[in-house]
Amino acid sequence: MYKTIEANYKNVSIVTELAQMSALDFIVNETPKQGLIQNYYTRKPFAAGEIFVGSILNCLMIQSFYSPLLIELLD
Image (cartoon, rainbow, N blue to C red; front, side, top):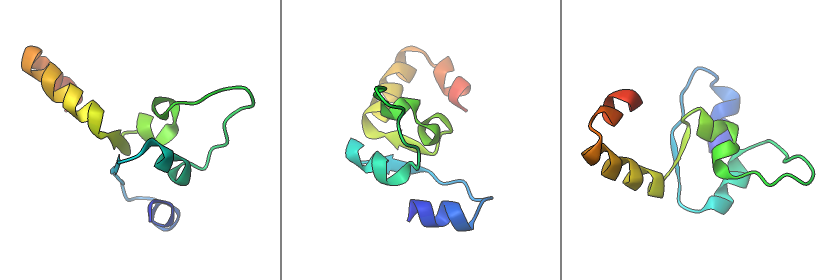
């Protein structure tokens, strides 16, 4: 669904939560450079804010308790 929406509707912003890291290969069209291991955080959709991982959301919630300005930074 991600690839279909992305291909047909360029002006739509998509936000997807990854339940499994292996699902990223179905979303990203990039082929990793030979000999280079790419993690999810180095991929374009993650850097653009289109994909998030549940564990990061938990981490951000905890960190925002100790650093309230983090919420303003993310906003």
